[in-house]
Length: 260
Length: 254
Image (cartoon, rainbow over all chains, first blue to last red; front, top):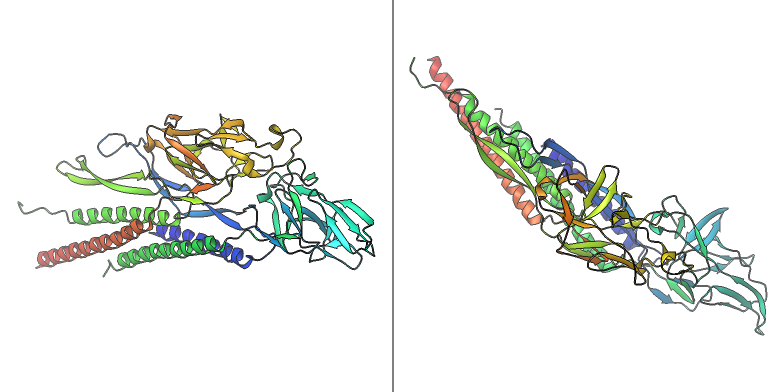
């Protein structure tokens, strides 16, 4: 009875975590460059009550063993790096990556990676994220610039009112063998990790990297309907597990009432 | 002394045994419900078989209940995730994975790539194709590629993995003649425990899908009701026996 109580409790805990993840996905439905997460479950270990091939009361060998599972365990909250939708913004510093890759930004000396391409210009002319993290390699927009152009292969050009080139540079993209292993730090930023593998540097539209679309933003890849359906399933699964707890509790109560 | 000989414990022992079996059933039901959202999970079931037991005491014959566990093999429903590294098996078979416990088998196809670009389970165990871990190397088929969209990795219904139409291996999808020998290891894994594996014939691999748990919550709810009522009946019969023995003892005191 105690086993059933704990098995069902792990089920409830797992569904609770699932709900936390769904809530966060839904909260970020409008966050540029946000990638949805999903909880990956696996069954917990099994208790072997009887091994296959044990001797029965009759003297024959049991054909099958007796294993009792002890619940469920969330093994990972994995980010799904599917492409988000594009939103046309016509802002010249809104850059969307179509395909693989991340922008690299430097914030207080630390390297971060992001797919949120809503860049701005800070007071020193650097291209920065909304949080002030500088795009790497750094690009300074010279004074007198009226137009910034970014080609699909990542060449950024600052032009003055006469169409003269004031500065030109190459935006680089970075990727990892396993982006799902990146460490999400919030503020649309990711940090490299051992699980993600070694950083790969590349030029947009080359060697498998994605292209850059100027004037577009990559929106969140959260699908509201999908999350709603998941929420229903989560709630019902939580309820079902609570019923198992209730039944175990009933049984215990009845057992306790045996002795008058 | 030719009076009736009653073993006052007889009934009590049997009800106790029944209570223990019911507890076991509850544990299995609770575990099924806990795994209602575990990919590739196959529900456990329990049937009771009656075994005649003769060997206790000279005249003592009693019916002994054995439990016979089984794994429900029914196909779980498919959930569309759109992730190119998620594979579902429709039909018979298991993916083969390399684990620290040796070769294990799984139906959970929520795979990902690790730092070394190997196709792995969420625990990090490599998935095997032609007996070796699958390495998804972008440069393998196109010169100079250092990264690529995961969707470039294609899997055919037969499990043949390819990048840009170039075959890189065939997933080992195996099945067993004797499923009853399979042992659940946890972590969505099975080990064969002596059962002979063979290549599965009747299957289809679906890319971008995950096979969900085949636990039917309705069935499990009915099980819970049944368990509750059966246990109540057992409790009533223990009470009844208790009262009968009490009366017997009062009569004998007179």
